[in-house]
Structures are given as structure tokens and as C-alpha cells.
Image (cartoon, rainbow over all chains, first blue to last red; front, top):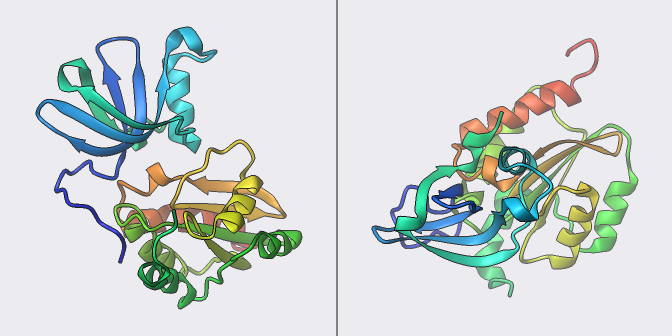
Length: 92
Length: 144
């Protein structure tokens, strides 16, 4: 029982880490991964220049306790995206 | 904006019918947390079928375990806003997520399952993590 959504994307609803080809790393709830874009809801972003933590430390903490969703929605062009993996895979 | 109560009612009942009482107001939450003896599990329920659809059956499975928390409670995120905020204020610097589950011992948060450790897992896997926490924190010293 629950509110499900109209998608068969296996990552739909899963909290994922989106690594980009640049310095940004996003964490958020995956809506869908499409041929040309990745859609996330309730996201946070790691930007090295703005963080006291390294990317690895930031991801480790997110995997341990979660993250503050500072951005409600994100659409990333697929060619910016290096990988999309469940956040749980970053757990030690 | 909260969902239609009629839509949410069955999701509430999945937990209340297995003996997990709801906390509907901040004052009920405060009263529940005022008792700090022993162990206590609070489940932050959610309408999201992608995650909570596995979380609720997982709680039901876990509550068949031999070691259990002394007290149980649930709040419904996105519905009972005041109660949910009051519960989350007990989570320290843990970011809010729903569904989620928090185990307290002697009033201290000792184990937390945020949404991302629920949303990609089967009910059995979620229950396994919960029961491992029950074994660690809810067993008496001679049982542990």
C-alpha cells in the first residue's frame, strides 16, 4: 500500500548519487533516468570550493545519516553525468 | 500540502493494526519522549510507495523478532506536521527524511535508518537491519 508513480525506472524513488564530469556531485531522490537527462527531487550538492569536507567525507556522511535537501528539483543533461548509483552503495 | 486523509488512512492502519500507536500532536510526542527508560522505536511514516511501501511491511516483520523495543510509536510525515517536526527535533543533527526509523535507548538516539537505507531495500532486508539493532540494543545483557 502506498502512493506509487507512473514509471518503471528501476531507480525511481531511490536516493542516488549523481557524479558529474565536473566537480559537482549531487545526492537526491531519483525520479527518472532518461536517454538525455536525469531528474532528481529533494537534492543536495557537493561543491569542493564551498565545503569543509572532501567529496569522500561528504558522501560517507550522507550515506550514514542522510543529507539536507536544499534543492527541490534538478534536471541534469545526460552528457554531464558520469554515474548514477544508489547512495546506500557508498556506505562503509 | 497534506494528502486526502482517506487516501492515507490505510497507510496509517498498516502500522496501528500491528500495535504501533500514532502520535498526532507535538504534545503527544513530548509526552512520549518524556519517558526515557528502556528502548523505544519511532517510525516516521510516509505516503511514498517507493520507500514506505517496503518500510511498513518491514516493521511488521521486525516486530515478530524475539528482542523488541519497550515502546513503539509512529508519526506521519507530510500529514501530521507538528508531531513530525517534534519527533525530528529529537534526532539531533540527523537530516530529515521519510520514511525513516529511529531507535532510542535510555532517551538517546542509538540507531537511525534514513530513507536511503529503506528505499532500495526489500522489506526483509530492512527488517534484518532493524532486528540487528534490536538484538544490539533491546536484548537484556544475558541475552545479548
